[in-house]
Amino acid sequence: MSDTTKAQAATKLAAFTNKIGYPDKWRDYSTLTIKPGPFLNNQLAVREYERHRELARIGQPVDRTERGMTPPTVNAYYNPSMNEIVFPAGIMQPPFFDPKADDAVNYGGMGAVIGHEMTHGFDDQGAQFDAQGNLRNWWSASDLEKFKRGTGLVASQFDSYTVLDSVHVNGRLTLGENLADLGGLSISYAALEKALAVKGRPNTPQFAAAFGCKPGDAMVRPDSVRPVIW
Image (tube, one colour):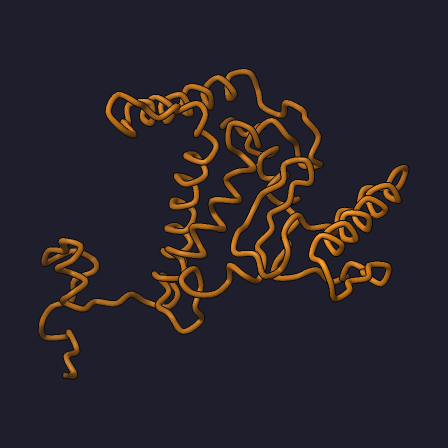
């Protein structure tokens, strides 16, 4: 990115609305009555309640506090028209997040999910929306061309994958999710590296063996200073 486009991207990132866990204001269900009896009757009552709720919104300002998922939902999303990332409480538990787990586990789980949704703001579709959620091109012509060239490589990579027999992945159709996965891993790894720079790094022999660390590498401590308790 050129400095001009990068500044626009930074502005958009700073404008992200983060909706974590559950809403500050709960929806009012006082006009909805659920009664013992046939399930269909309660289904119809819920639909009627929702119909009135939607009709009442006509002509009103956009409710930017609204969420598209309920708190117990195990999922997350980015909404380009609202420029928001949403992480319901349901996903912030094992295996995605555990406050007692090692940093690498949490960054590899929830960290990758957070990075994934952040990247959606800059994937092939999200990149078409500005910081206010307007469908507007904020890229310079040359930067946009470079972006399309780079995303084209990702699409071509996935085009080559075979699902079954001669059925190939449609790289263009899956591009948004593929870019988000790639960006999510890159972001979570960078965040982990930043955290480890402050907290320090493990240097166990098992880590060195698993990741092919050799004597002299930054992650390998000499035997004379490597603590072995048990």
